[in-house]
Amino acid sequence: MVKIIGYKTYSKEDGTEFCTLIVHGGLETVKSKETGKTYLTVRKAHVPCTFDSNVCESLIGNELAGNIKKVKVDPYEYTNPETGEIMSLSHRYEFIGPDEEILDNHIVEEELVS
Image (cartoon, rainbow, N blue to C red; front, side, top):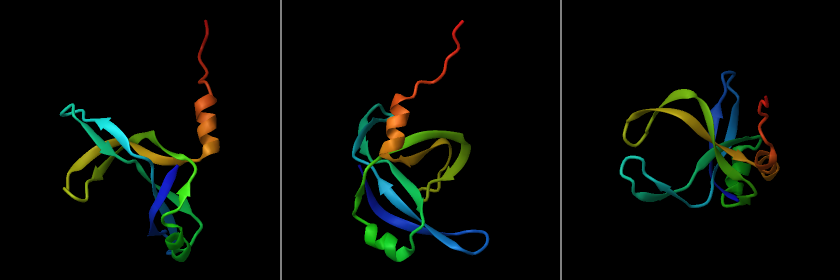
């Protein structure tokens, strides 16, 4: 399950606006690669939607079936808004619904047999 914690409005190049719902998953423990210590975190993702800001606002606090998955992407630069640090990342987090999750867990990648 994920929880809707907010929304964000974006403007397209043609001037029209659209919203994304901001969702976060459950509490996770992660081990730091630098210090080796364990810390707690939640994964967060933006999910595009067809709702206006009034509907998005009314949905905050609702839970939705699914999870947030780490997905590999081409490397890109990200500036941490709190520290100003520029990082090179090669992943993003995406919401996957229960149907996609079932497929992901049961599809076996094709391998070459000689």
